[in-house]
Image (cartoon, rainbow, N blue to C red; front, side, top):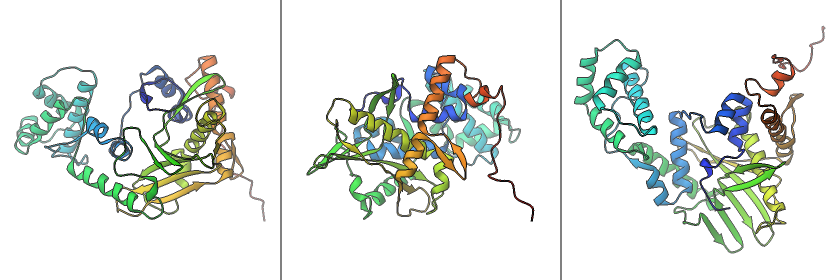
Length: 357
């Protein structure tokens, strides 16, 4: 259950199954370790906040550092912002490949790659240097494996963390300083942060990394919780479950924990809660967090499949079985459904035919 190079370890994960639903070729690339992960600004912030919440302070500072210089051009709607973004992408690629390149060469390349025509390259570079852009780029290239964040990003993340810890409903789930063991004890209650779970499903190696696992050793019960950041804060959070596949995540983590309780180990014989909890924290307005419980029926349907608006929706086990089919047949260009229908996808939009009045 200790964290052990989770992201480097090859095994079937919730992320892999989600990618399989979107496009099997990308799922295959994930299996082979060749998938390119392109993060949006929101995803980058979410990863940093995740580290601030569940890593030790030492682990956090090994991954992130507040930049002394900031990107002066962040508005990608403007040509200057397009140029700065292109430069950042080039620098990321250079760092990822452990390559070397002259900063002036990268700046010129970024101008060409951005596709902008105005201002002229010499004028833009002169302005970029004058407002501190070169200092920012130099610091960026020196960061290597550390991700640079702005002071504003760190302050916002710290404020969100304080909001969670001070909330009367969910505050007890979190701690200000995560210990090296990534677990805390309160009497007979143990809270584990980002429990690294390895398990087998139909002889296939699988893995899961839930944010919070609360173990009641007296009652021998387990509750799984996942923390989500959201910029579209809304008490009607249900549409997000389908859009972002949170139901699949709740199902997969439940499957993983049930597997652990069935094998020899310290959690053998413990009962996994039939409901799953999500905590949503707002990244924009600083609102109080919302705790959402997947009902027992929703968890069961998310695992085994169910019907939504009279339409069949695959569960985690259905998608896992599709994965087994793709592996056994080494076919990844289309979904299993598309192969079954000889290269065709079938729409299933409407429930019933409207009867004439």
